[in-house]
Length: 311
Image (tube, rainbow, N blue to C red; front, side, top):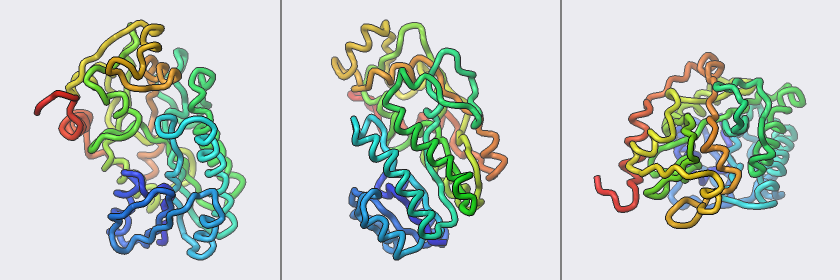
């Protein structure tokens, strides 16, 4: 199968590309960032998915499947450019897939789609709408991209579309939203709150994406691993120190005195849990995680020790 990975220079995308190449697929990649150490056999195109050069890749190479991993979060890109990358980029991807006969698309989204709110159910199913976006406006463009991708299920019924809402990843070398919460030795918590966090080790993420591709799943799926863990437990087990603070004070301290630089909206994510029901994905693909919560935390702790810690 000829597979085009969008956002291939990202850490998980690189490892997925290598895994698919080893499995016998023909792998192409598209990203504005370089990947100088790419394995021989992976065809790279350093272009923006929104530009004409990206459409030329679709037109000339005619991929059978596309894995869209080229969305960004507020931690990496801020302001209006993030919205243009996420929503305009996603629209361009699906337009090209329709125009050039792509048979299968995986849109890799995030479980934060559901929002963090005090009245949310403990376990979110795929049929639920997003909540509390007014409190976390940074998520609006990612939610819009997710919803737009989901419309392909009825707008383009000839194409096999899957929207995968992945929980937080944690692994080595420690990148992503959850890892950013744990960047310093002292980790802020909102006083009186200790939300559950769902995690997946990065190798399990790669396995899940490969299964979704090869099983040709269609629909919207939550993707999760072991049972969720309280935030305070994750902090302590990774060698950090939890620092519970009143929310108004914490909001003023973000990015100062050794605390991570988080957006104000992110405070909702360290107050209320976002936990998902992933039974639908397990049944469709047979996915089973290989890393339990203890092993996930241990891998992260060893690869990203707290500043000043020795192991």
